[in-house]
Amino acid sequence: MAQVRDRAAYNRTIVRVVGEELDLDPKMLQAVVQMILDELLDTIASERRLELAGFGVFEVTYRTARTARNPHSGEAVEVPEQHVVTFSPGKELHQRINGEAGNYFRLPGPVTFYDQP
Image (cartoon, rainbow, N blue to C red; front, top):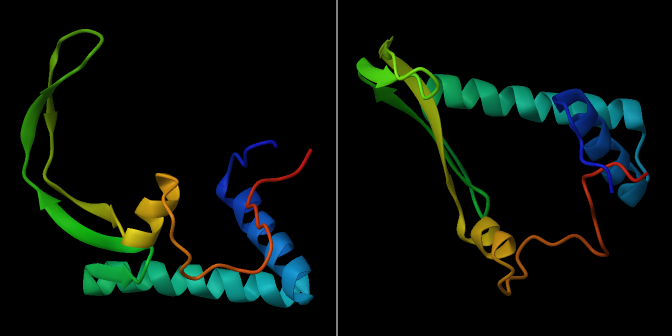
Protein backbone atom coordinates (compact mmCIF):
# COMPACT_ATOMS: atom_id res chain seq x y z
CA MET A 1 0.00 0.00 0.00
CA ALA A 2 1.26 3.48 -0.86
CA GLN A 3 0.85 6.08 1.84
CA VAL A 4 -1.07 9.23 1.01
CA ARG A 5 1.24 12.25 0.84
CA ASP A 6 -0.95 15.34 0.87
CA ARG A 7 -4.27 16.54 2.24
CA ALA A 8 -6.03 16.65 -1.14
CA ALA A 9 -5.08 13.06 -1.89
CA TYR A 10 -6.21 12.01 1.59
CA ASN A 11 -9.59 13.72 1.13
CA ARG A 12 -9.99 12.05 -2.26
CA THR A 13 -9.17 8.70 -0.69
CA ILE A 14 -11.80 9.18 2.02
CA VAL A 15 -14.34 10.11 -0.64
CA ARG A 16 -13.41 7.08 -2.77
CA VAL A 17 -13.51 4.56 0.10
CA VAL A 18 -16.73 5.85 1.70
CA GLY A 19 -18.36 6.37 -1.70
CA GLU A 20 -17.65 2.77 -2.72
CA GLU A 21 -18.78 1.41 0.64
CA LEU A 22 -22.07 3.36 0.68
CA ASP A 23 -22.58 3.70 -3.09
CA LEU A 24 -22.78 7.51 -3.00
CA ASP A 25 -22.07 10.13 -5.67
CA PRO A 26 -18.38 11.17 -5.35
CA LYS A 27 -19.03 14.87 -6.10
CA MET A 28 -21.73 15.13 -3.45
CA LEU A 29 -19.61 13.17 -0.98
CA GLN A 30 -16.58 15.44 -1.63
CA ALA A 31 -18.75 18.45 -0.80
CA VAL A 32 -19.94 16.76 2.42
CA VAL A 33 -16.37 15.86 3.47
CA GLN A 34 -15.23 19.44 2.82
CA MET A 35 -18.19 20.87 4.76
CA ILE A 36 -17.36 18.62 7.74
CA LEU A 37 -13.68 19.63 7.68
CA ASP A 38 -14.59 23.32 7.40
CA GLU A 39 -16.98 23.02 10.35
CA LEU A 40 -14.32 21.25 12.45
CA LEU A 41 -11.80 24.02 11.68
CA ASP A 42 -14.33 26.77 12.43
CA THR A 43 -15.29 25.13 15.74
CA ILE A 44 -11.67 24.78 16.87
CA ALA A 45 -10.94 28.40 15.90
CA SER A 46 -14.01 29.88 17.60
CA GLU A 47 -14.65 27.59 20.57
CA ARG A 48 -10.98 26.75 21.29
CA ARG A 49 -11.97 23.11 21.98
CA LEU A 50 -13.44 20.29 19.92
CA GLU A 51 -14.18 16.86 21.36
CA LEU A 52 -14.94 13.98 19.00
CA ALA A 53 -16.19 10.99 21.01
CA GLY A 54 -13.90 8.00 20.59
CA PHE A 55 -11.41 9.97 18.49
CA GLY A 56 -10.00 12.66 20.75
CA VAL A 57 -9.91 16.29 21.81
CA PHE A 58 -8.44 19.22 19.89
CA GLU A 59 -7.71 22.20 22.12
CA VAL A 60 -6.15 25.62 21.51
CA THR A 61 -3.51 26.48 24.10
CA TYR A 62 -1.27 29.49 24.58
CA ARG A 63 2.52 29.26 24.61
CA THR A 64 4.57 32.11 26.01
CA ALA A 65 7.60 33.50 24.22
CA ARG A 66 10.80 31.58 24.92
CA THR A 67 14.40 31.12 23.90
CA ALA A 68 15.14 27.85 22.12
CA ARG A 69 18.25 26.41 20.47
CA ASN A 70 18.83 25.54 16.84
CA PRO A 71 19.70 21.81 17.04
CA HIS A 72 22.18 22.06 14.13
CA SER A 73 24.15 25.15 15.12
CA GLY A 74 23.37 25.44 18.83
CA GLU A 75 22.50 29.10 18.22
CA ALA A 76 19.86 30.69 20.47
CA VAL A 77 16.58 31.41 18.69
CA GLU A 78 13.73 33.56 20.03
CA VAL A 79 10.37 31.83 19.64
CA PRO A 80 7.45 34.29 19.81
CA GLU A 81 4.31 33.75 21.88
CA GLN A 82 1.64 31.89 19.97
CA HIS A 83 -1.54 29.87 20.13
CA VAL A 84 -1.15 26.21 19.16
CA VAL A 85 -3.58 23.34 18.70
CA THR A 86 -2.97 20.30 20.87
CA PHE A 87 -4.54 16.88 20.41
CA SER A 88 -5.27 14.23 23.03
CA PRO A 89 -6.36 10.88 21.60
CA GLY A 90 -9.58 9.32 22.84
CA LYS A 91 -9.99 5.81 24.18
CA GLU A 92 -11.04 4.24 20.85
CA LEU A 93 -8.13 5.80 18.93
CA HIS A 94 -5.69 4.81 21.66
CA GLN A 95 -6.93 1.21 21.58
CA ARG A 96 -6.71 0.96 17.80
CA ILE A 97 -3.20 2.40 17.71
CA ASN A 98 -2.05 -0.05 20.38
CA GLY A 99 -3.83 -3.04 18.84
CA GLU A 100 -6.09 -3.50 21.82
CA ALA A 101 -9.58 -4.90 21.56
CA GLY A 102 -12.24 -2.32 20.99
CA ASN A 103 -15.22 -2.47 18.72
CA TYR A 104 -16.68 1.04 18.83
CA PHE A 105 -17.83 2.85 15.68
CA ARG A 106 -16.63 0.15 13.25
CA LEU A 107 -17.82 0.05 9.67
CA PRO A 108 -18.66 -3.38 8.26
CA GLY A 109 -15.74 -4.97 6.42
CA PRO A 110 -12.17 -3.78 6.08
CA VAL A 111 -11.68 -0.07 5.41
CA THR A 112 -8.37 1.55 4.49
CA PHE A 113 -7.63 5.23 3.88
CA TYR A 114 -4.53 4.62 1.78
CA ASP A 115 -4.35 4.45 -2.00
CA GLN A 116 -3.97 0.93 -3.31
CA PRO A 117 -1.09 0.43 -5.83
